[in-house]
Length: 309
Ligand SMILES: Nc1ncnc2c1ncn2[C@@H]1O[C@H](COP(=O)(O)OP(=O)(O)OP(=O)(O)O)[C@@H](O)[C@H]1O
Ligand SMILES: [Mg+2]
Picture 1 (tube, helix red, strand yellow):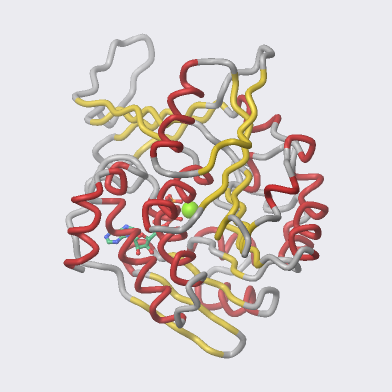
Picture 2 (cartoon, rainbow, N blue to C red):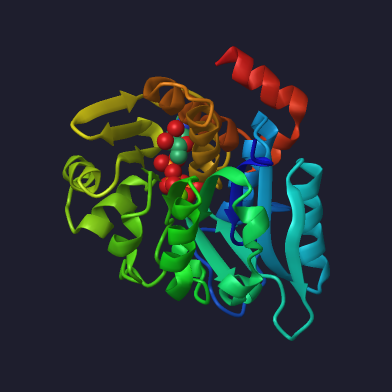
């Protein structure tokens, strides 16, 4: 029996979220936020943390800098029960990445310093540990600049070793959607884009057409649709599941939390309707608290919410 249910190799950093900023951000002025939160960020780490909170056995591989922000992120993941023994620390000038989120009444800005995220390469991966798992998940494809050219090799080895594989590209900051994505999809069992990503990747204008097109490339497409829930296609079969009706506090990490809830059930062999409902439940749980893992860290709150919905 493999040691892990899921291994994830990817980015590990904190999110610094400032709430209550004015809509206009004039330069050279001191602008006051009314609340802030420093919390575990990065798609890969949020998926890992929340999968572990749900009860999956999770191994995590990453690269952080020799700095206190990296240490805080690492501690958070460890406290969440994730195996972080294969997270490496570099002692050069590059520090751990950081995302600053400016939350304003009508919109938000997401500013990322990639730091060690962009330096994490195939040489940093411990394949013996990574392949001692039932499943491999990859997030934030386009932030992994050093790893991207070797991603086909990584995916090929994962599939050759008999693991199942899921991918959530998240956004492409350049909005090009290249980097051999179509080639990579040949190895992917479960593809987890949001609606915008699905249409950008396929060059279509509506989610319906995008999901149909993607279902010709991968065995299972699961599209996240925010307050509209989620849509899946497996071959010619279509599945849909509505979002929960809840009071949303913070959208950060909803998609990653959906991935965690979906994959947790998928790896238990549950049917697709159950997997989708689970993703919608954990996506909703995430938005009821700030950041991507706060709602999952609080065991009593998490279990209460999941029992109730
Ligand atoms: N306001 C909301 N109310 C209820 N459920 C929500 C809400 N927002 C998100 N969700 C749930 O979370 C899931 C993922 O959200 P979304 O579609 O925004 O993903 P995403 O765009 O990938 O997010 P992220 O920005 O974290 O990458 C949705 O499919 C839904 O189930
Ligand atoms: Mg996403």
